[in-house]
Amino acid sequence: MRCKSALLFLLAATLANTGFAHSFGTPYQLPMPYWMYIYGAMAALILSFLILGFFYNADYANRPPRYLDIKHTTPTSIARKLRLLSVLKICVFLSFGLAVVSGLIGNQDHYRNFNMTFFWISFALGASYLSAVFGNWYDYLNPWRSMCSPFRAFQQGRYRYPEKLAYWPAVTLYMVFICLELFGNTRPYSLSLVLIGYTAINVLCVYLVGSKAWFRYGELFSVMFSLIAKMAPIHFQNNNEGKHNLLLRMPFSGLLQQRIEHRSLLVFILFMLSSTAYDGLRETSLWFNIFWKDPFHILEPLLGQHPLHAYVLLRPWYIGFETVCLLISPYIYLGLFLFFLWLGKKITRSELSVNELSLRFGFSLLPIALVYHVTHYYTLVLSQGLKIRGLISDPFGWGWDLFGTAISGRIPILPDMGFIWNSQVWLILIGHVASVYLAHAEALRSFPNARQASISQLPMLLLMVIFTGVGLWILAQPLQG
Image (cartoon, rainbow, N blue to C red; front, side, top):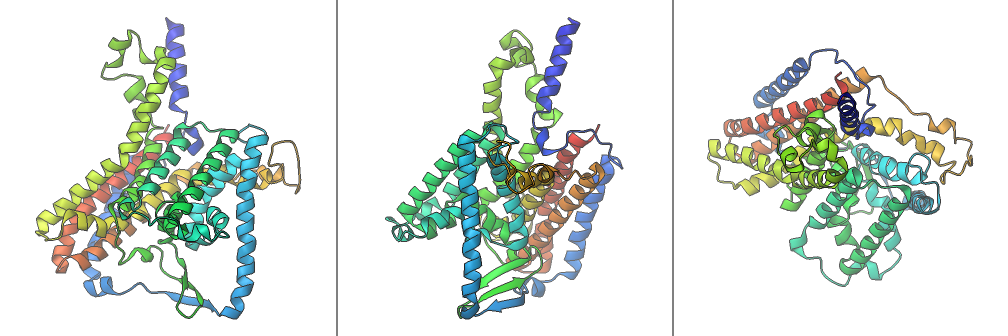
């Protein structure tokens, strides 16, 4: 009996730590009690709300964002920049080509093959963070756009893009992408097949509806990186005189006076938020206990034994359960968002519909989605992503050392756990304060006076406080001993 108990405990511990890749998996005692962090963060949010209510008025809210034009180029100098741009396009395109080939013929070890680290870490994560700093660079270097651009037939398309589709293709591809990341158990070979399939989808859709429409509405990474780029302090602008301006602006100010054009884009933003939160939640003991420890005694009577004894039988059902929870997560967030907007509408007696309010205030959630993503994954970029320096010397995992970095280039950066936790707390707090600021600015433009604008934001402030508390709780779970 003791052997069975020990076996169950070992299996439970193994299952509970399945997703350790997003943290270092070592216990960490918080420097202060968790309640002090959460109360401090909530107090900071409330204080920022009060300061905005007193000092930020409609005149400020209606001013266009300020930009500092640090450099503009004439058509004469554009040629040199285009050559550099062409080189960068070729580098990105060849990197994806190498990822596909290395996955097909290279070593199938996750850590020795170039394509796993390049796509999941350097591209999917690193490119997001580049967009948050350097703006929409991906719009110029998109490898799938580069592939289609030489062919004139791909520019116009054969059919007009259906307006009703809006951003739903991007939402669908985003959901498939996250399902593959969390549940797909991809290996180098299967990842190469995924990249080939995704390339075929892009080529076909560009052929049908044209390059401009598809890369605006349908291509997953174009939509995601362009949303993140709206928060970047660097912005590239093409003016009517044929000049390319490099502008500096305050972080997150690119979201001011912006309105979401369709509900599907709001769902995309909410999935950016909910999928990251869900990825953290599923690593906690609470989530593990809901299914495998059967606290409500639902599974054990049906199985005639403890669920852990039926692991092989239940594993596919567990994956299905997790997948369903992931796919409905943005709609749970949407319901919460609409409910708190409805409360604000009721207490202010606004004539604006809840749908209109959701489109006006939807961008205020983007900073939260960004900081959740950064706090949850940036340790992966430091621990595994930097190993791309070594993998480029041995992309197939065959023992090569082309550039002399095969060994030295695989040394990761492992920050102190105290630094990780404190940086995560600060990032989450900064993101939520930015969201409170954006929502307050929008309220001043949407409601007739400052009093109504402030009152309308009380439910939204409560929502931000809930998001902050949940986010910090999820982050604290893998770190607390």
